Length: 383
Image (cartoon, rainbow, N blue to C red):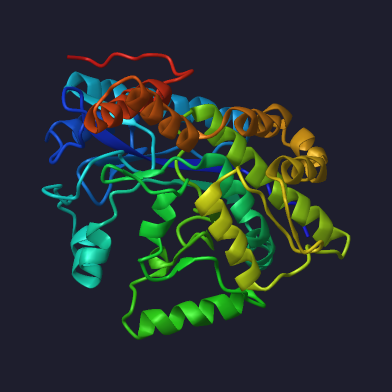
């Protein structure tokens, strides 16, 4: 079998807030998306709600190339937003926004989704991050999907950014997952013996009129039906770009490590879906704070130790893919916390300093606005 090229592409979804009120905008300025499209040439798109906007990198040969492209996309959308009195935040939930009068994007696909899913989809005031890795072989994509499910909770903990929902500290580091799980065809993927089996299952849903195509399979990882990629979808969006790149690097390196095992007629041990789901819940609830279950040992292991094991297992792959620094950055995330930790700390510090609840939540938004642009060159747009 020819080794996959392991190209990488990253999609990020952002929230748009009013610079004065710090609240989500109800309706996007009509000129904003066309401006972004003119500047970004097909790399930007609307999302279900007008307070959201999505960008996607080109197909990139390296993690460094993906970082450069994603920084340009973030910087450009932020500049256009700023020209309309808006600000961009990279967080999976807004600290205090209420669904209320938020407007849906007028697009046929979203109209169909709303008709099918009703109030479930109207609650999706959430944003995520998707990482595509190029794997041309259909059978290999399915085989690696079956195996990579194990490590998805380990990736989720590194990017948690949704502790607040409608003005309340939810007690979860990734409340986005709770909202997302109300949707059908989400969560961990099924196990398939072959690409043919996957296609037959998909065909049943399409023929029965349940879905139009595989784009409405929203698992935590899925074989993309638009590109020859294996798409990781479990992660919250990272507030800092450098954290996004660390998770993306770990994901592509883990896939390459699994491929190396396959070449040697080995594979990652298959664990029951319900066990992996337990780790998924722990990641959602505690993030990096309480560790995950090591199924071989049958005990909870602290996340720093698990991370070191992950880094060691894919060290050869990080070197081959030239992303050792990005993989190693995960240690810094653990040491200083994720966006969820920063948000909770900012809120509590503001309350301790005498702020009202609303003022404390606005302070969280201000922090997110600043950190979203960390390490990204400020850009200006014409006009």
